[in-house]
Amino acid sequence: MVFGSIRTDQVDIEKLIDIDDDVNDQSALLDYLDSLIDTPLNVNAASVEQLCTIPWISPALAARLVYHRYRNGEFQNIAEIKRVRGFSTIYD
View 1 (cartoon, rainbow, N blue to C red):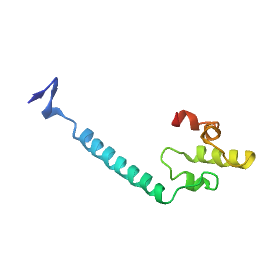
View 2: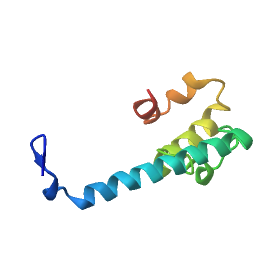
View 3: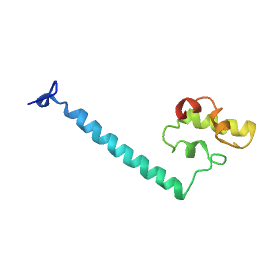
View 4: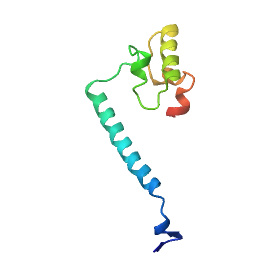
């Protein structure tokens, strides 16, 4: 059978599995984000380990956030957080 220019008998099963994994990852992400509504993570008090639980925050970025907070005091707004190297490139 042909669908467009792709033969369906040549569809890569691994790609279908990856799509399903992406859906599961998105569901897990949504569940995690929902949990943050009930128990928010305070960026001004969180440890590196706690910050790493946030999707897309690497250990290096978490360490820079904590270090910036140590050197400059608590973050007062999002603009201050975006000044941390690596943060604005991910979240802009």
